[in-house]
Each structure stands twice: as structure tokens, then as C-alpha cells.
Length: 321
Ligand code: FAD
Picture 1 (cartoon, rainbow, N blue to C red):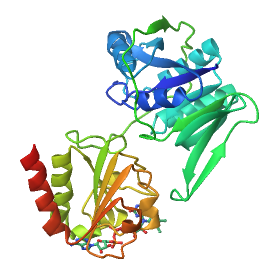
Picture 2 (cartoon, rainbow, N blue to C red; picture 1 turned 30 degrees about the vertical axis):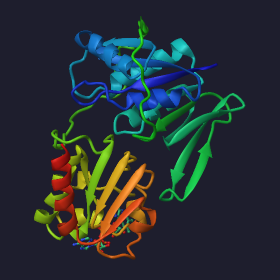
Picture 3 (tube, rainbow, N blue to C red; picture 1 turned 90 degrees about the horizontal axis):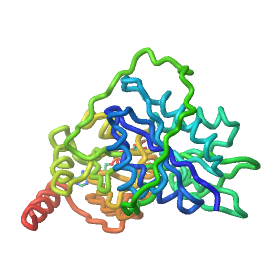
Picture 4 (cartoon, rainbow, N blue to C red; picture 1 turned 120 degrees about the vertical axis):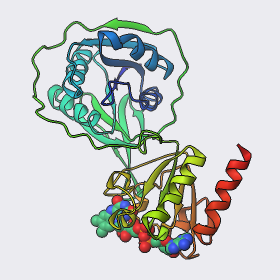
């Protein structure tokens, strides 16, 4: 069984992203996962604990010294050194800003093929193959390298983390390059609502559309999201109308999500919206138009006014809590 290198990327606060669990579950379809982590000396213990809880049993630590928030350079050097150390058949990274960049730069460095936004992976004749859901989920296409390893970025939420805490085998990488290949001159952070789960990785998402009528009406999506412990998303029409921020847009030109539960409130279900959510496990749609296309893909469709139904739903959820 070949080795599969898993790149554990960090967020802007230096915390390992939860999506490492998704990568580990995917990596097991291909071979024996080895997880590489770039961390400062004071972060190493927490980082090892996090990846172990997500199921990592072999961990390579690349100790970094920089204090900057922009870690992609360090993660690239760590990935390059780890690649040289374990000679994997595939490298998996999460398909998120930053991690995707590291994956692409690594692929160029090692001369490997890059397959982006995969929703599944498997081996065929011993070689890794990636599956992609395209054109709004209407088709599944496959990609693989003619020769050499395959670097794959995995869609966030494409698989549930199936980690068991283990006692990991931890080694240190000491062949890191010192020189930074790229200098980052400035980074502009867009504020996110920290109280709710991150939209890209949330297990539950409540999205609102033009049917919510106004920014005040859109707050109904936030109230239901809070009752469910969900992230908030939005259709492009809701974003364009100023009900929600652009960072919440789900769809072809927004974020792609694949939660366990997706609730669409007052969203018609245009193809461009469906492209970003139709691989969700369970879809619930509330729409007053019984012919709205979203109801064709909903597991549970409720025909009615969101302003009548959703408050009752919130009351019922509160009552059960
Ligand atoms: P509408 O289509 O206007 O639907 C509103 C729905 O609310 C209707 O079905 C109506 O019956 C229902 N409704 C109204 N009042 C109520 C009520 N009181 N209770 C219950 N239901 C009610 N869209 C995206 O979402 N994401 C994208 O990334 C995206 N990218 C695009 C890229 C391109 C190149 C293009 C051309 C379009 C893109 N769009 C995208 C836009 C997309 O085509 C639709 O216009 C958009 O998704 C519609 O948003 P909506 O469903 O909120 O609004």
C-alpha cells in the first residue's frame, strides 16, 4: 500500500483546520496516510493533538520560526520536505484558500499533476484517481495522472471525518529550506462572524434567498441557523439585494458547501445556486411556489410562507432543547 501525504493546513490564527479529518478519511481510500504539520515550537503539542484526534497515526512535524499570519510559504516548504521524505503516491490538501495555493505550488515544484475540488478518491490499478462533481453536480468526471503522483485538493465537507484518537508516530522534518520563495507584502482580512460555524465546513447550513424580502427578513435565516447550530448562507439575489454579505454566497460564483443538512429559505433553486449546495446530504426547502426548482432536489419540501413556517420551526426547536 502506497503512502499518501496529507497536508494539515492552518487558519489565520495558526489553528489546524478541522478539515484535516475529511482529508484523512479520503486518504485511507488510497493508501497509508502520513500527515504533515507546519507549526511553531509552542504550537507543536496542540497541533499533534488535533491531527491525532482527527485520526492521524503518522505525523511529520516541520517546526517553523515565523510569526506572520500568512503561513502558506512555511506550509509549502514543509510539504516539499515531507514529499521528499516519504515519496507518496498522492498528496491531499483541502480545497480552501491558502491550502489550494500550497497544493498548486507543490505540484509545480515536484512536477506532479494537480486535480482540484475532488469529491471522492480511489485507486485504479494501484494509481490514484480523483472524482469531481461538475456542472452543478449534473456530471461526475474523473482525473488521474498519466505518470507520477497526483496532488488532489478535496472539497470541504466531501467526507465526514472518521477519526479515532490513536497514539501517533511523530517524527520531525529537518530538511526544510530557509529561503522564502515568495514574499507576502500585505494581507487584508475580511471579518467573519465567529459565533457561527464556518460556512465552508459547517455540518448544517441555513441559506436565505430573495424570498426573505429585506435585510430584516433575512435575519430569520440567522435565527433558524442559531436554533440549529448552523452556519448562514445566501443566494446571489439575496447578496445583490444587500440582505447578506458576499462572503455568504453559496453557488457557482460563491462558496461550495456539502453539509449534512442544508435548509433553503425563499430560494428558487437556480442552477447556479444548486451548483454550490446540491451535494448536501439532506436538503430542506421552504418556498411558497410549489413549482420552484429547489423542490425538485429537496428531500423535504415545504410549500408555504417562510414567515409563517420558520418561526414555528424555531419555537419547536427551542421547546425540544
Ligand atoms: P429568486 O430566484 O427570485 O427566488 C426567490 C424565491 O423565493 C422564489 O422561488 C419565491 O417563490 C420564493 N419566495 C418569495 N417569497 C417567499 C415567502 N414569503 N416564503 C417562501 N418563499 C418565498 N445564484 C446563487 O445563488 N449563487 C451563485 O453563485 C450564482 N452565480 C451565478 C453566476 C452567473 C454567471 C449567473 C448568470 C447567475 C448566478 N446566480 C447565482 C444567480 C441565479 O441565477 C439566481 O438568479 C439566484 O440564485 C436567485 O436567487 P433566489 O433564489 O434567492 O431568488
